[in-house]
Figure 1 (cartoon, rainbow over the protein chains, first blue to last red):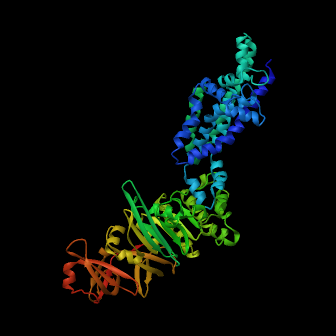
Figure 2 (cartoon, one colour):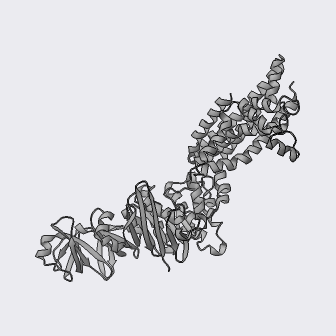
Amino acid sequence: MPDFSVIWLTLKLAIIVTLLLLALATPLAWWLSQTQSRLKPLIGSLCTLPMVLPPTVLGFYLLLMLSPNSPIGEFSNYIGIGSLPFSFTGIAIACAIHTLPFVVQPLQNAFESFGKRPLEVAATLRAGPVATFWLVAFPLARPGFFTAAIMGFCHTIGEFGIVLMIGGNIPGQTRVLSLEIYNHVEAMEYEQAHWLAGGMMLVSFIGLLLIYCINHQSTKKPRTGRQIKSKSAMINSPLRKSA
Amino acid sequence: MSEINAHFRVEYDGFKLDVKLTLPRQGVSALFGHSGSGKTTCLRAMAGLEKLPNSYFAIGDEVWQDSEKGIFVPPHQRDIGYVFQEASLFAHLNVRDNLNFGRRRVAPEKQKVNFENICSILSLTALLDRPPCSLSGGERQRVAIARALLTSPRLLLMDEPLSALDHALKQEILPYLERLQQALSIPIIYVSHSPDEVARLADYIVIIKEGSVLKNGPLAEVMLDADAGVSFYDGRSSMLYAKVSAHKKYHLTELSIDSLTLSVPQISRLVGTKLRCRINAKDVSLCLAPPQDSSISNILAGNVSAIEEGDSPGERIVSVKISAKQTLLATITYASTKRLNLHPGCAVWAQIKSVVIL
């Protein structure tokens, strides 16, 4: 039987990272979808960078950035979080950075899919920017939020390289599912490896099934049909990358 | 100052817009022009959806944009209603919630447009619980119009609201627009490239050509103008305001134009309905005495007020004043003006061959 503390740690990590990312990526994706600033290509590229970098490269620089002697390390010591590398907080930050593009992109696509028109209509109906976001953009982009959450969650569960670089392999702290599978295989414990690997396959499959079901349902409605194509194109590309 | 004043200026990649307007604060003012003439840009600038540089826009003494003084009121703080070319209903809300979207944001004491009243004028009462995707194109556009009106705007801006609809749906919506105009005293600025829509709805017209104002003024007056008339309809024509006065035997309907009468093939409008008709200048001929034995039954008496050159050297356009406010145009040959010795002030009888009811 698998070690449930590993599963619990992994789920905790995925939930925290997903929530954190939804909170951070929503304003970022909204800004990227609306801005005409010259900074847009720069910020857009920076947000996508973690997707194309090998996890070891990202992990290496994050390790340096988070080390106790760095400004960030000193700050985290000062506010009492303690040393970040080889801690749960450290891998949560690292996973959030690595997973950011997988959450930003579906949100940005969703915000861009309905165009400027509904937002202009809202403005002519006296809705200020905040009301327009919550009453128009958010509900129209809701399928994008589902996709973003599922992508973020599944991608975090599957993190391997970056957790190894930042977190090491500390039981109960940073030893997540993917590392545990690696440990089992190294130790020739194929049965345990099967339990975990099979479970991961199942969870990932269910996650994808959910995304496709949501997309399929919104395709049925004629008026929201446009956003489907871009989104499923979006799902395909990151999956190929992280496989 | 109880007028709408606008001066919009912008220049980009070979297109220059410089439109200065003074519009009445009542009735329907049409911005007419071909696509790409800049009329939609003007309308968007009025709403604040477009922030043009060096521009000015004020309704009465309320200034919404004055680039010189750095004033720019964002769209959601302007008292306007805006109807887009496509209905653009919120897909996630049903008809009722779409209608209430803007109304909720207007203080109750400022709400002058009654919900039930608008729903009944635009026949929306039965649609309130339906989602937008289940509505027809005409129904959607009616919801969009009602939604804009329910914010009790000081100004209603309409950007080709009928152009996405086919002919039958246009005919379905036009009477609603006319009824609204009579029921509410909200000034409307209506952008269109359809002469028939403009001729039917507008009281005041601005013809915009390649980014500047070609002509503006009350509709019937502008239509008499040579440059404007030609760019408006293919040939010169005049527009008369009439009222259905009776339905007669032989399938005829009688229209009264001030003290004069026109007979037209029967139309299905109630007696007393005000309407407009257009008379092509080529369908009008002139006589010096009332003809007794003509097959043409519409013969109106009037006085020549002007004679100008027509499209070709052999043609003349004669303006005939048939009442204090209404003028008829007739295209006749130069030779005929000489033969009949037509001159301003002389009394003529105009024979009208056909009338287009708008």
